Length: 367
Ligand SMILES: O=C(O)CCC(=O)N[C@@H](C(=O)O)c1ccccc1
Image (cartoon, rainbow, N blue to C red; front, side):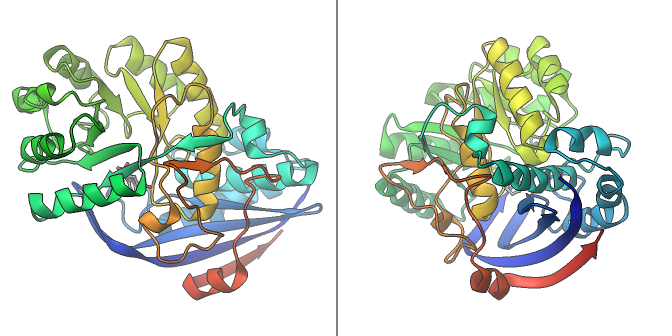
């Protein structure tokens, strides 16, 4: 397969409601899509960076720049191209895992489309539908939180994830547990605490949470291992897990008992599968995280969520959780589950007129 050109397309999709986390509030999702044209087919990739470097060091314009100046030219120089050699070809460039992930995803989609194989089949999926969790932002009041959580449970979501931060943690968790009983419930701190908060975080133990996600700083693996000795609730890592090797190190150090796998964060779906396999070898449950993807990234995440080690519901919500209109056919919850796409490649394509409506810029790079 030979690369003939890449389209960089920025889109801006309004959210159905503001989404507040410990790293800020979003009212729209700006992100970068890639369309890779080859001598056989084309493929789509989605770059999960936020508009600003507040979740990870990457951001939309930085990802576009590194793709345009370094990553795409490095691939164009290769005679033969397949998804397995994208990672090695880009390894000379440090970091930029979300940008690399988007490019690998697009090449993987093109390659699998050309040979009529679904991404789910390629990754080793064992389910044809996946149970879905939902992420609930920080709210301005407990009453509003309970109303929102009740609505998601009525829609059929199998697991509730509450965003927390200092000042919004024990009270919302207690209120949700008291109102809704023994639902599957977890929290996500997005690095908002320090080891000095260990006693505060231990006050979450009585609420029988599935996990506490990323309570401490991304690089504080030793701190998470120390926290795990002082808090009974399982620690789950997100931002800290950047590769299969970092997953193995964190597990060995006792820093986590659960891992959130986000393909964009780790450089792509092939590394995501390697993390899944490393965790499975250590008996560590995993689940597929989310980054407010469009239907393109959502389709690929659902394929990953169908792997055998993904034993916890992921942040693979319906399209309508975030968007009034998706750029693909919408993913609609059915009995708390979403179907795993079966078509070639990622199994979905953008609907041109819907994609054009949210496009803020497009750039064609001939190769
Ligand atoms: O359901 C989703 O797609 C979002 C789940 C979620 O909370 N994602 C958070 C996170 O910290 O995990 C996030 C959102 C946007 C970007 C990065 C991370």
